[in-house]
Image 1 (cartoon, rainbow, N blue to C red):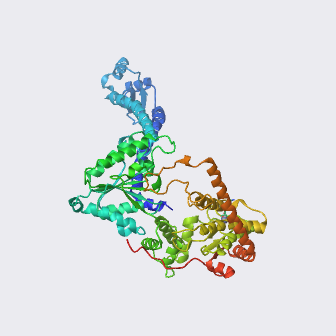
Image 2: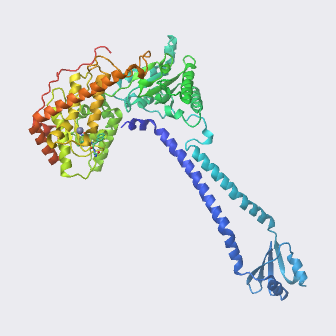
Image 3: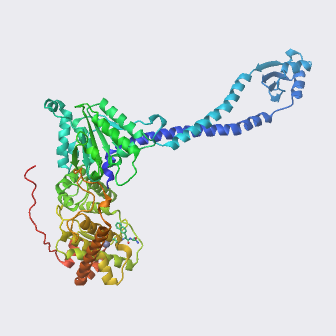
Length: 636
Ligand code: NHX
Ligand code: ZN
């Protein structure tokens, strides 16, 4: 889900990695080929040579005898090897003792010098060189091979030569062709960043009025909401180079590397100023220091300090702007957020319905849509989806249309893709009829409890087709983006989660292990009600860490503020909320057992029910929620 925007963001990185890998692969292959051929040569070579010599080797005496009988035309003396070519054309080979001279042998045998034509080929020197090379080269290769292996083992991405150098990817002016047009659903963030773009484009305008240049922008928001994309768009709009690095990339191998990478990164950026430096996942280095007794992380601290030093060291109006991104704004070290550092915080939140429609439009460019597709309905159906989720969804829809050999994307393709993105692909499991019945009643229980409560949303879809980890699911997407959530709504939501278990108990008089995920979510909400929202008997109180990233004075994660007694009261309040919600769920499924049976039977039959089919059985939902027109703030 959260990967897709990152994919866009790190494109160049992966390209670079592939290149590095290919390079390694080539060297390794060459090494292996050379090494094995030498190995084979040294093992098999001499044996082959010996064999070749052995085929027609005769004794020295025979050759000498034949020479004296004038049978031999020429003799070739190569080192100790003597090849005799006979008048008949036959070639024979023999050997003499090391150090003996063939001429001496002939004169000892009283053979006149003119009896045979002797050619001496003094190959001693070349042979000697070859022999030395033959013994040294394998040793060098062996050494080189081990050196290479050790280097590989040390870190596949870091060759010895790039030691300590930042691997910031510099995007040339031509390459960052993303502009604000390609970013949708984050209008407020765009607005704030436009100022930065304007400063990069027309610095003189600001300097004239004595304005200090912005140094750092912190993009805070959940994964997949387009932080990287926004940073790139700033670079693209201002037409300046874009240096990007992830916080985790500073932390590698040896101590001190992080700081040296920071220095290198800033040096490069300043050289090609005006420029944008983008640091993704800055919480990896910028977490609040010395928190909760955690041992200080020296390397991280040094890296962080170096970033602060570099940012402080910008000469006034140096046109390098650092954009950092994090999805844990609450964890950041306050030192990072002080004036003159990342003093501009831009919240990049999940898109609202209009934003989602705009994002869908961007991602349907180049995807032919069927006439049945209503972008506005998809936008309403995808509450809580991030930009990356939507990108993923449209891509899945296109894949599904292509797989079914359709010429355009249908509404059903997109609906299926929307479910797949959140719940995973369908999965065929071996199931008995009883398994399916349990699942059907469990899901029907959720649907019934939701339907017969006042403040819940209409059931969108019920399915007993297994997906990912789940055997079945009930989709109840919020009708619109909700700002306020009341205690009543939360209690009803928890009861809906209890509805599955309640139905199982009512019908089968037994319970299964499957409701674990329901309870997980229910407990999460109940805990929030007690510890964050002040919705329990403990009263208006918040025990959790502060959510307000702008409040530097708040104590960060001070665990000791909750007493033992309070903790046990929190636990018992959570427990009470869950029990009450379960009791409500049991009441509702009991009172609507007939509908429950009908829905479950129908589900076993058709496996998937959508809103219309469900409402045919239980009637249209009586929505008590106040329906009024929505406005935007007048002042902006
Ligand atoms: C199992 N799965 O583990 C089987 C395969 C009770 C009819 N033996 O509540 O499927 O039992 O309303 C994320 C999402 C665990 C994480 C779902 C981790 C489900 C789902 C357990 C329906 N629908 N439970 C549900 C279900 C199960 C599980 C999950 C998760 C069932 C229930 C899973
Ligand atoms: Zn369930």
